[in-house]
Length: 368
Image (tube, rainbow, N blue to C red):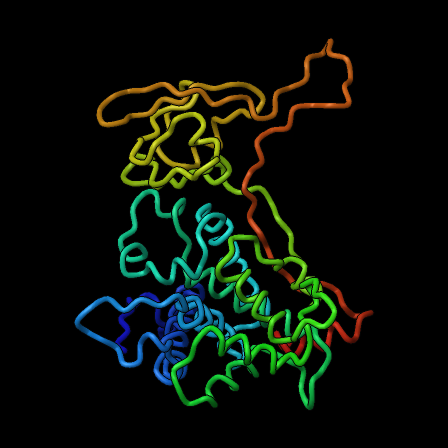
């Protein structure tokens, strides 16, 4: 694999390092290097042999690309190239990327894997509403499985972990199937996953197969907040920038703010915004960049949004999201709820000094 990066991303003698850019580069190098084992050594049975004359479909790219995406930053942490705080910052970014993709609620990561040839590499303005990335969602499936294993009692000499699952799969020495992944999970765990209600007498393998199916072929949210809390990582959220709250992606370009995508179910869709619209003014005040929206927005009253759509000037109405109560209004037990805003999730180490078992498990995972 040949990787190309800009000079600005590399450390230079006598100059401050662009840490974010350099960390991104290191993560990419780690990702491609890990493919030596996961894709080069381990590969889906559909790719053995690989037929270069036609499309080769598999429903397991969530494993081969997603799990690799989980381990790329993990290895930066384990080798000391980044610390736990930086790792959790990178993990928070992945969580937010998935949570701001409405397609995750209607399109499984297994289906996204199968459709990679026809959809993933042909994105359009509706991609975020129609699909989900098997890289980012797959890495969160890997995270959830790793944490689900790490909260179990030790089975043998070491605590169960996704590392053990990967080692079991490598030892097979052949192309693998999803059933092999479920078997490796069951063998590594030696017992039921704690977050899955299981009837008495259910085989351990069946329980892990069910969990794997739910997380890769279903569209329910992964229980990440619960799993992270059990290993001493706090999940907090704050209000997102205004475009994200409204459910749209906006790009600033040469003094113009243009809508790149409108998210399904968001305020932007409700008021009639479309991809390609140029935001001109809010309540009579000129909009030239996304920050201008927050400067002129007043959530307590309705406002007029002027947009340019294919050379037509349109006026759209943004409703009052948090209307001010009338002075003469009587208190009421029931009030109309404002549309829920998409939040930004932040992960951080929590104080587990009084929970030695939780601290030990977190140290095994994060070295912190």
